[in-house]
Image 1 (cartoon, rainbow, N blue to C red):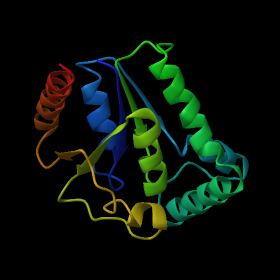
Image 2 (image 1 turned 180 degrees about the vertical axis):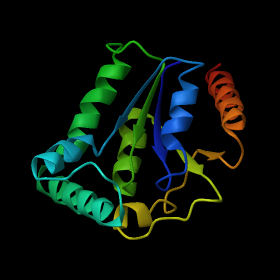
Image 3 (image 1 turned 180 degrees about the horizontal axis):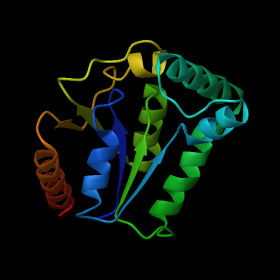
Image 4 (image 1 turned 45 degrees about the vertical axis):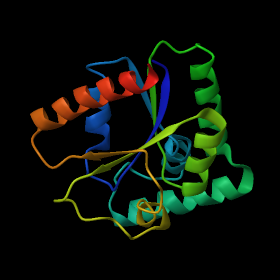
Length: 168
């Protein structure tokens, strides 16, 4: 099973936890399209926090970079190409990605599938365009993270089985 999954959802819904739990059942590499922006942001003094002000800063900085030379997507493009050519030792490549146009591009160019993770007890973040537009994508899968950690682990196990069955 070789599959690229684009992971999305509001901050704090359990995206990283879901991917970590998925990794208990199948070899996974997890990355984020915003990581190159975070490296630059730290050089500019960002302390790694993710409050509303920080999220807005990262979203706007990423947008500027995307508009200038699309560096963030190019980095993920290299990763996806490397994965599909067999250069990475994993079955799933999970990439956190927010912007609809980049998600649609990954689906078209690399056959990526999209996963929305939600949690009813977490309020949707709308203070910046990247977070505000999370629900403006037509997702292939929806993970409801409304139970316990054990429930999410079982959801991850079932999801892995679903992916395997779909590829048969």
